[in-house]
Length: 244
Ligand code: CDP
Image (cartoon, rainbow, N blue to C red):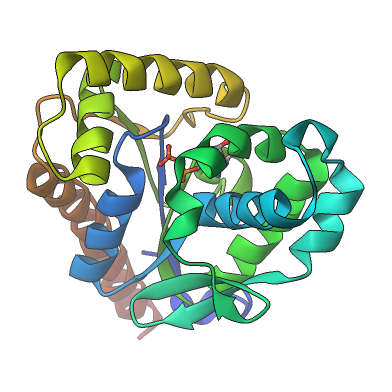
């Protein structure tokens, strides 16, 4: 990992960037990877979702949302530190599970396409990461937000499997094939809307999780991060050897 002493204090110590399409398991994977490594988890999608929730409460129908109106609403949204990560707040109160609801999910891509909103989210994410070792998940973390991250992972999975997992999470039961087919359709549509910003960095490791369990995908990323930590540590040792 980088030489911490050489970094200015407003730079993150270490970034593990996890990107990928809708419901590829980024957030839950990032959460567990962060916990295992003792890093903090920053969920960039949660900011887009929180602003979308606030807009749906206060800015009328989604077709009428303007960038200026959303940017004004964004002043009421922030990330607050909690153990292991950050929690999105609206007017200093937790935004809650409503950010994962179907209406927010339907409208969020519209918000995420506004350049000023993307800049706002990126600034908030960088602020949260300042001085921390972090696992950050999103769509453009390895390309735009932290292009110098030492470890970048791009998670993909078959759309049917992604839809099945998302439904199991939401319904807490086994979904029917018809339900999975409907959800697959919604995911594929959202993938299309998010396509411009969902970019695999050239130096990202592609991880197809279709046939992996959650635990296996977490294990793989933790192993990659630890391997990098060892390289950083060995380099640090070698550096000290030469100086002495
Ligand atoms: O539901 P899923 O886990 O796929 O998405 P999320 O990470 O909660 O992100 C919700 C939405 O925010 C996405 O559909 C994108 O429109 C947007 N997003 C983005 O554009 N860039 C990011 N870095 C993160 C999320």
